[in-house]
Image (cartoon, rainbow, N blue to C red; front, top):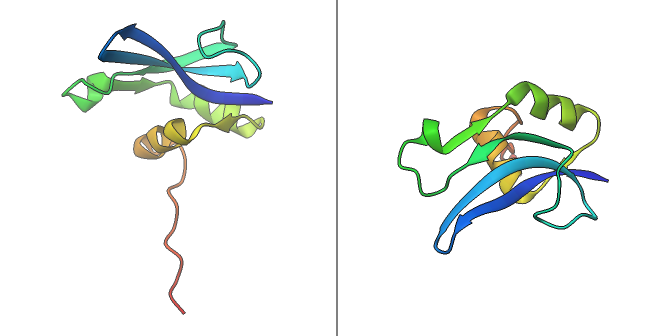
Length: 90
């Protein structure tokens, strides 16, 4: 199965991630199928902190790639994926 997940870079206490398309059986830092962008959780400016190629992300989601929990929340923040709708109260 193909997954959209984060690949960690950076030094100790200063993480930096790349959003990658990878086979789920591969190790975290192994070679990806494709790199879609990057995510810097410490960056103050949100525009610099998260950059993802939305077209390619939509393509991979359309062919069945499953995003990790963190990538799902990042894609929802960009508007690539629909956010969860609140269940109507009965």
